[in-house]
Picture: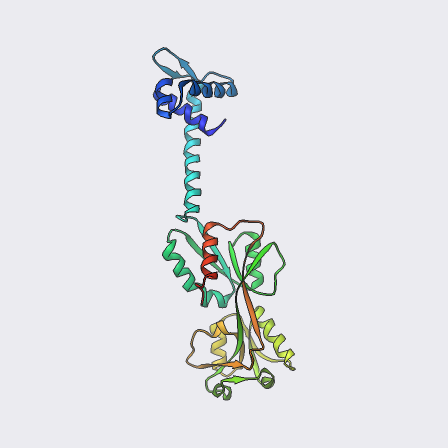
Amino acid sequence: MELYQLEYFMEAARQQNFTRAAQRLNLAQAALSEQIRKLEAELGTPLFNRGRRETTLTAAGETLRHHAEFLLIQASAARRAVRDLIQMKGGRLVIAAIPSVSACVLPAAISAFRKKHAEVELALLEGTSENVAQWVESGRADIGIVQLPSIKGPFVETLLFEEPFVILSAKTHPLATKRRVKLGDLADEPFVLYKGRARDAALAACREAGFEPRIACESSELETIRSLVAAHLGIALLPALATRTPSANCAVIRLTDDPVKRQVALLHRSDKTPSPSAEAFRKLLLGGGRH
């Protein structure tokens, strides 16, 4: 049973005449009659009482009309939903990202996306790179933004940007008077670490510079880190993006030769074609709508 056959059947039922129905459908009457016969053969019963002037439904035809009407309405709704999704007149886009990106990159990108596609519902998930990868793999998020290195899984990775790490200190700290500093010269300083892959990168960089950092505190909240640094609990080794928001009580110092860097990438499932809205958001980010 095909949808077009049901559409033919419904028109014949409305017109109560095969000739008029065929004209409305722009079909030859013979073609319409043939499709009705095929439908009756499949169902094993006549659907119409065929008269010379009028064609009426049998009891089986009345039953089919009730169900056919519902099926055609659902089919029309499905076509409309898919069309709206393709044209981005509806649907939902879930973006997952690490905190520094969600705080400093995504607001501008989301604002630009909304101006073009206001009818797409947006949702944001924030977590570690591992969290983001899990959400993308499970289908909870459509696209993700993570810090590399690669995360194992069925992903396509696209490099979004690369950035150096910098030192954040209190404005009244002696370091604040310097424009650049060597990481190895900070071995005696206590550190406030930013949890996640940024923490791993900071620890690895300190060890590469020849010392094990003395950890005063760890936090996954950037605002907490800024406050603790401003209170002289320690200094922080952070991605430059995480220090983008100005702080009246903190100073940013570059590291000599930018020895610590990180790469941030977009993720989507390799076995799943991105939705039109996800692809549009990816292109927006890759095209420069980020920072």
